[in-house]
Amino acid sequence: MSFALSTHAGDPARLATPFLAVALANDGKFPRALAALDKSTGGALSRAVRQRDFKGSRDETLLVLAKGRGPQRVLLVGMGATADASAVTRAASVAGRKANAMGVGRMAFWGGALDAKGIENAAIGTSLGSWEYAELKSEAGSGKRQTPLSAAVICVGDAAGTAAALANGRAVAEGQRIARRLAIMPGNLCTPEYIAETAQDIAKRHKLKCTVMGRKEMEKLQMGSFLAVAQGTPQDPKLITIEYNGAGKDDAPVALVGKGLCFDSGGISIKPADRMEWMKFDMSGAAGVLGAMEAIARMKLKINVVGLIGSTTNMPSGTAMNPGDVVRASNGKTIEIINTDAEGRLVLADVLAYAARYKPQAVIDAATLTGAVVIALGNTAVGVLGNDQAMIDEVLGAGRSGGEPGWQLPMWPEFRDQIKSDVADIKNTGGRGAGTITAALFLAEFAQGYKWVHLDIAGTAYSENDLVAIPRGPTGTPVRTFVEFVRGRAR
Image (cartoon, rainbow, N blue to C red; front, side, top):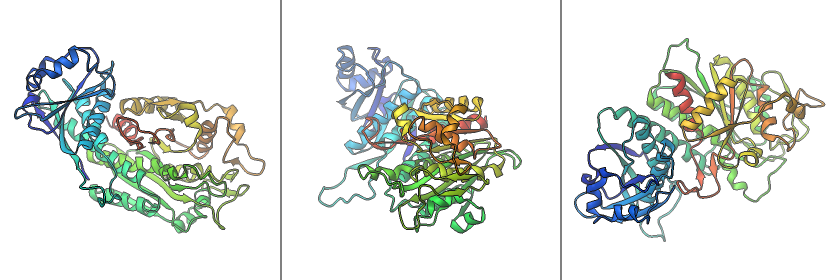
């Protein structure tokens, strides 16, 4: 379901809405601009701030009922000490989640004198908080479901010049909703075929070019690394490309690459049964590519972008790849398979090699690639590695701007020894130590001839715990990093 976004200029006290969220910093000050709104609550808002019943701490909330023709309910939301753009996004998301849980249907958000970036982030935040996946839930036995939040109004001082900011916020919000829906869907529904159909739908709506190749076409391209993963499943693997042309036909594109493992059992090197159900999220990189392509097409950026997705499932069977097997990738390199659960890099190897034919100006791949990145960076930062320092810095900046912070890990040549093979050019895992780094070094063997950055999003694309601003499940990462990077290149 799409999320409607609009702006309101003027005093928020005059806005007839069932729910108004007011985002405040923890400076102990109540804004003079909200004097009329405070009056509609009998002075409860300013008293709460003055008496420190509401301190403005991050994620803190206080709900107050109002009287009159304006807002029916006012929710104070804390932004913490740093009321920056990311704080606005988070406060708006907390508010959106609260409004959705209350079943009010629509809401408004006030965050002070929002600039263009603030308006955009407020729009994204309300959408983030409101989103939920309820398509498979039955209303039987639970009573009538409350009205989901489907619209938000962003309060601004002056409506002039806000249209572009709101449109950008709407574009990113819709991209994130696509990515989060794909990621949370069960693996028996979100199959490689379904991901391909979603790409085709995006292409059709925005008049983009979309190409889908299956097992036979990949055999002709000699993608032995990708096909090794797919040989254990009867589902047809998919290599999906979706092309957005916003610049001249001779302009080199930015390539966004996503790992699309719709379910990862680990294959013959099977994972423990406990929490294996979370492996439906192993296609979050692919979901991020499609979400970004949706946003980029909506924003009509003046740049060429190609999205590439390798999608399959990793299953144990009589035809599955075995530890010790050696396969040949499309660039001619041979790979010894040490662990069949290190399958994402096998898929990406051929997709990254394929990306070279577009002669890209830059390539960014995103993958839920290693558990090691969670050990290193937890669930807060994206692991960032690459072959060009200037581009790495650019990607790190894009992540900061989009509220998806990353941290660079080294790719020193000393780590390369860990993936040397006795019988092939390279092996697909170098053991537990420096696992995120050796995985990136493996990918670097196939990201040849162009500038490339790898995002390991295993700790950030989804959460097994409630994050307050959003529930456990998909976060929308790396949609905003992709979009911010492309926007930066388009300017």
